[in-house]
Image (cartoon, rainbow, N blue to C red; front, side, top):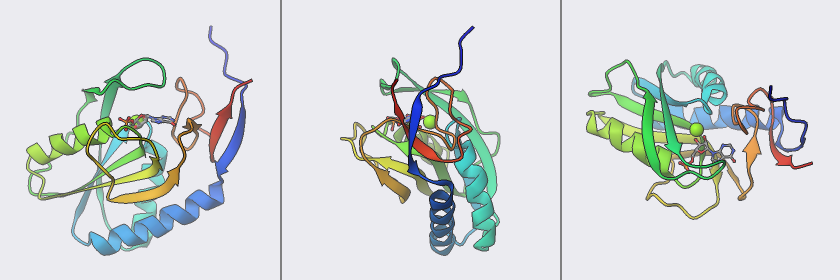
Amino acid sequence: MMLPPTDRISVLFSEEQIAGRVQTLADTIAKKLPNDLMLIALLRGSFVFTADLIRALHRSGSRPQVDFMALSSYGTGTKSSGNVVINRDITESVEGRDVLIVDDILETGGTLYYARSLIKDRGARSLNTVVLLDKKVPRKADINADFVGFEIPDKFVVGYGLDYANYYRELPYIGVVEKN
Ligand code: IMP
Ligand code: MG
């Protein structure tokens, strides 16, 4: 049996910092996208961010609908290959809808680029993207998020939904794994 990891995690963004930023982000989104929004959250990493974002959007006067999609880009360890596959598709129609794709973190851009193309092909009326974290690394795909929570350096981060080997998603803060 695999034991839970015991690495030291140094805090990058505290619970309070995240909560404050998510509300400001929601205020901006609600102002710029005032129509009936359909959120499509990319699993699994964005589930915590999405749960907070929809409640922040509510406080900003927005009444979004929500669906989920699970994508994986096959690769080894912490490197993604750029080949994206759908593990779970949305069940709602996006035709004619104003869609906001939600992801946890933008790195090479492969995942978000794929999701964006897919939803566009399915006839969304408008398409925007929000990521909690934007990692400052060279992109492989030609994409930037329309709304960004925080920009971060090229470090592997965990917590608030983000994982290492499916651990650490439950951390209420975002941190960097300091290997023992
Ligand atoms: P991209 O396709 O290279 O942009 O990678 C995006 C996906 O890789 C995210 O949705 C995450 O699931 C994962 N990822 C990238 N960087 C990190 C990280 O620092 N921690 C945890 N997951 C990450
Ligand atoms: Mg992800």
